[in-house]
Amino acid sequence: MLRKLTLALLLVACPASSPAAPSEPDRKAAAWVRKTLAKMTLDERVAQLVVPGLQGVFTPTDSDDFDELERLVRERRVGGFHVFGGGEALPPALLNPVYGTSGGRAIKGDALAIAALLNRLQRASALPLLFTADFEGGAGYIVAGATRLPRAMAMGATRDPGLASRAGELGAAEGRALGVHVDFYPVVDVNVNPQNPVISIRSFGEDPELVARMATAHMRGIQQGGMLATAKHFPGHGDTATDTHLELAVVEHPRSRLDAVELVPFRAAIAAGIDAVMSSHIRLPALDPTEGLPATLSRPILTGLLRQELGFTGLVFTDSMSMHAISKRFPPERAAAMAVHAGADIVLDPPDPEAALRGIKAAVESGLIPRQQLERSVERILGAKARLQLHRSRSVDIEAVPAGVGGRAREALALEIAARAITLLKDERGQVPLRLPQGARVLLLSVVDYASGWREGAPGRVLIPELRKRFPGAMAIEVSDRTTAAELELVRALAKNADAVVAATYSRTAAYSGRIGLQPAQQSLLESLARDAGTRPIVVVALGSPFVGELGGKLQVLLVTYELGDAPEAAAVRAICGEAGIGGRLPVSLPGLFPAGHGLDRAVLPPGGPIAGR
Image (cartoon, rainbow, N blue to C red; front, side):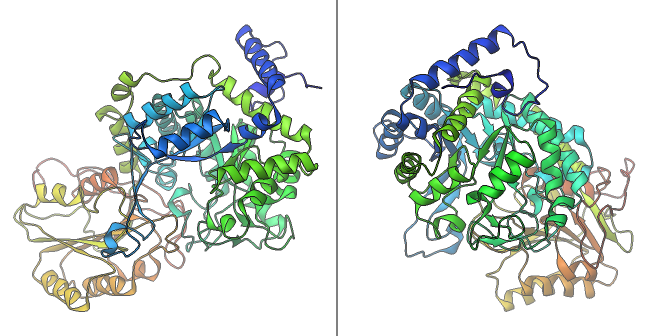
């Protein structure tokens, strides 16, 4: 017998104290959910729980790719799709490593192509589709032309919840303009492990209270922008040194530690009304001692802890089921069934959607997944779609996309966050801001962690031309993991003839890379430049990860931006040249160097100072 839906169900994660008498639109939405659910077959109910991935690129109607998407919609009745950026296939015999990996090269999606494709799929579907995306750096994180916002750690460095809220609202508004409904953000992991290769700058910091405060503010902004917000990765991915895209990570902490650190932001997000929670592919023996079983497949964690103990009533998504921590350890049929049995409402991005559908249906028919549990999941999914008013209108206005996505006014917020985030950690001789004549010989050195996989544009794309505006005679050189010892020696020789060196390090947090930080030869180069500097300024700007290890203790000047891309590079140039003040604070500690909260202040130089262009 169908349970009567309440307003709390339709509002997914709203508190139980919601008004008892729903408004007329809420009554109509509740009626739509009841009537829709009553007419659904078992296959249709199961299908609502499966959300495959799609590429956000131009997809002709007359193509194999669109045929498969349309088949999943018309015949299999899947509940929605996860929108990735794009990808380019590469040959298995890779000739040039800068292209990417042998599996392909990631690129950004196209805004108009995404909106058009999602509209076409909505028209083909009997029920509204729910579209999700990882807008961790705003929609521009995966969509070319959309606003690329700095990620969580940069916002954490500003200590300003208002900025976090504005960023969430802007990203969500652009997402809805594209037809996307669920933002898999904020990351509420507490990053307490400097060696974490996959969370790092995606986290607001290492202080659970700061993470909770900034994440809930960002969540409210996302909701105000019209999207559903998601807290991830439950119950905490911040203290791992393993990339779960590659392997199963294990967190050995006792329950008392999890309560004091990892679970703090999740409790805060749930209390604040988070719409969804995403599970992690991490094994936590203190919560479930089953050998080899990650949280995504653990009933004690997803149902016992998340649902029953923490009282979460919203949507539970798995992390991508194509990640190797799951896909290399469990067959797709079994993995999907286990995730739903554990308590997940939606199986995200399964490597084989058909297998996922078969596995869940068989588990329901065998009784492993109770039909009542399946019904509750479908109610939550339909309720979320009704909350988003998808039962009334599913499509977006393609003509409105250019006005609703990207542009200078929105880019101003990205620049503001980037500027407020910059943190000056060291300045032993007071060399920041740089005080140099316009004709100074400046060596601009880009130190890139590794040459491949640059989805978001070449490193130095903004920093080099902006510095050359101030110092027209500047020389730019890039070194990477492929730079030879002889070439590094040449860089050392060039530095000796420069009046100043500005070295920008680029250290990425990237899925499937399994590594973070610079190579030993690159660190040695920077150490030698600092050691042999004499009176010459050597300014190092860490773009991306602030975790520079022992290198930080051997430098004279160190600034950190916590992010890569155009806005952080532009902000770094203005800070170095005294055109903007510096006031960011470390959201994480750098072991043996600086505690969380550390940062030196610098004021804007007055007009007419001895800086190029002033």
